[in-house]
Length: 389
Image (cartoon, rainbow, N blue to C red; front, side, top):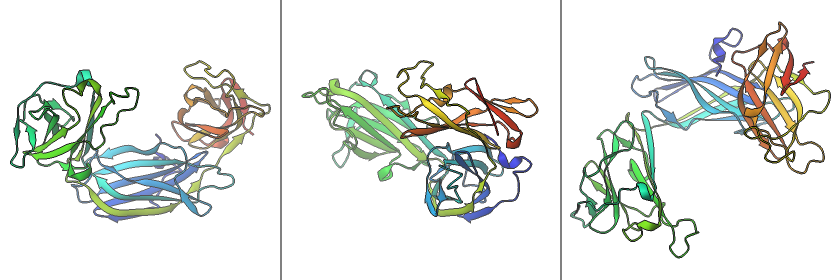
């Protein structure tokens, strides 16, 4: 990914900044090119103890076109370019797909968030019937009459930090399957109902074995125990074990103080970058391939409509050939593309993204370093050279 504002001609002072709850968001650039708008920004913790490399959030980017904001189609979304632990400063880029820069370019970009979660952790474990520990384990009954497993009978690691783990799992004296979790004191749970872990399981209906499993998604009983939870799966018994399809265990929590809530919102103007376009002199039609093969024959051919070059990327627009019944489709990673500059340099941009909708689509590649579009003289696409006017 390009650190755009580190390059001469694309660097400069911040265009907007926002501070709230000790978190400073600074925007350096909002740039629209070919089919993607990128917002480059930093997020810094001014308190010194809030953010870290594992922080997540609900940051979203929307673009204003013709007076209305929407989320676009395509683009890689949010990417972390770098993180400086000494300054607790993250450098990020958020990209969204745009439609038509010529007729309706985006005019503003809006970045907003309602929470940040430092030290975010999550892990998943899926166990099929033959992988599930199915022995009878020792259990006890709590003062309120709930049956729970005793701890430490067959410990299993669930997440890399070990802050949440499985202490025991198997059948208890009540004839039902139980999973006992243990968690450290500083864990801040992020699953519904204040839990740091949950279990889902799926049983086939013995009367209709071809039907999708019915049990699961809430058919559990959670009991608070010392240092964790005992989760009972009422429908999973020694008799129904043969119908088990899957047990899915999940943990999600914050290891650095919990969730920080606020209202961060920042709107900045979008700069549309200089573009060069090329249209094939004669129709160029390419077949859909997957793994080098043509699974649909020539039924989903795509006709190259135009190529657009910007300082950051190059994008090929496709349409469905006239008279073709099925909409066009290509596999962007299987297309070959190079760009020749005026000095003879040949660049091979890297595949970035693609979008196919109805009877048209686009595939986009990204340059390793920004280029001057006026220096691009031709594009070679799957062996076909197209001069840039």
